[in-house]
Length: 430
Image 1 (cartoon, one colour):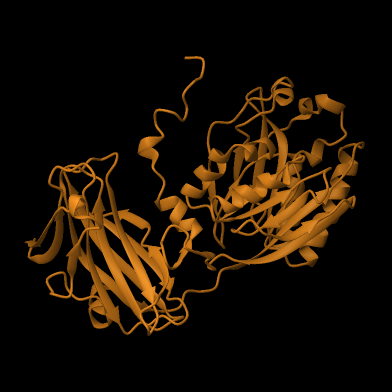
Image 2 (tube, rainbow, N blue to C red):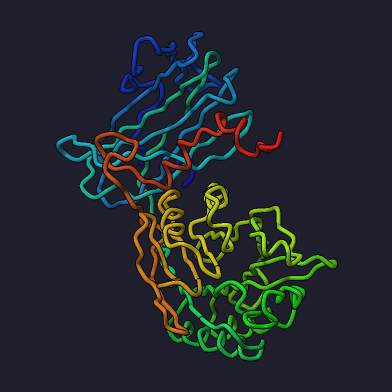
């Protein structure tokens, strides 16, 4: 939407308007508030005055909101001389009904760097059903010095975005003995079934390609990417026009990795992830850990991949979620059910597990930690769930007080990495 279009539909008044009110949660935290002009346009400024926990906000409430309609929300800020580690600058929306009762509170949480040091906050979202008002808060807190200027607040009705529904398939192949030909036949069977069930993406369990081949030393049968195994996966991806995630022992430059590969709908290699957390027995097989946490953009959304032991470490899922992953896939030989439920709930995103061995080892979990599809102890199978990536999962009083809060946005926005630095990554032997 162009600036001219925004001016026609913007529910927010200019920062120079008297509708904008200033305030602080407590008088001991109150900063100074100023209405200024910068580069020829009005801005709202908040100035810290020396108290280390200064907290102030400009707020404005607008009527005319239509529940269920989509809105483009924007505001720009310029921070000067603030405490870079501890300071927090945010824009928050409170949607309320005709009786002025709050419904949801949502951060404007997509950021971009603009000209001359300004930062843009952006979000496009549907107003909750029943909404009639929206209040915008432009806030600055937890800095002993410096100031933040706000400009160009926008809440403007916009076109409804396309629905992003994706059919996700997890699989199960249980076997103790076999060879690669048998393993490929089993994988081919579940890949065919996933295609018949119109999957958009299919996840296979960890190490199915090598399962039963050579016992605990099966890692010595690694192969390069691309190679015979990825060619096999690509043939099904092209045939059924879906993405495939599968793991294998990859060799590159004489080094062995436990790698998950993503094959796209055209059969191309869209990316790969090398398992970063290795159980001892795997390290003793000669596997080398990876060191990066890539995310992958597909035609339906952004995904991340963890492999088995990775899911026991919450940092892996959190790093992927912070990079915008909307779905997490976990090819595994078997993990505790609680791990996948926790990774979904503590990041507010779907988790898809393709496992082995244990009771109901393969499952699809929603952002609130509820299992929405799973497979039990059968030797082979496919479970499919249709997921709407634009659906928001709210919980009453989650961080935001007397309203509904959304975990995915809140967890990402309210982290305090400035307080973690001295602990995370510290070697206990030091």
